[in-house]
Image (cartoon, rainbow, N blue to C red; front, side, top):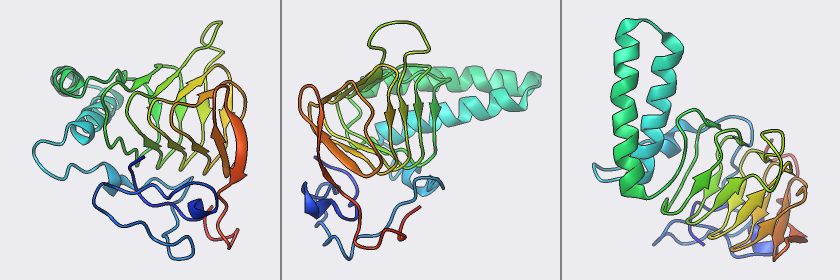
Length: 205
């Protein structure tokens, strides 16, 4: 899996880190908040940066709609077009009105599908081919994902479940039940196999 390093992961799974970046030991890895979004994680790094450009179009659309007025209505239509362009490029399905906390990272956005009524906390990492959506029933039966949650490639998070802060979902896991904070869940259906809590429990909120 790729993404940013996370403290304590060495206890169960290999630490997630961006391509070409060496993983830090658990005791040296920086702590990432589950409550305060790090907006720099979403800032485009270059012109061709599909995942971050897609997220930026979503943020700009939501901001212009919230401000209201005729000029912002026109701007919101522009961001709809930008969102459609990067959606096609990224091959992801992330609705404009979805509730996602700041600091989202999608290292490889292709195949990511997020239900418009799902909720995702700040500073999460979502890998390719991830689905966050319904299992059965209506809009009341949708996941709530906490902050600083890492979701591995191909994972499915389905139904009216809660994923706790700092949890980690393994590659291709099918999560149908609640996952506690700091837990590591893998398998089909997913089961808890460990805890990624850092040595200092008070290091991250």
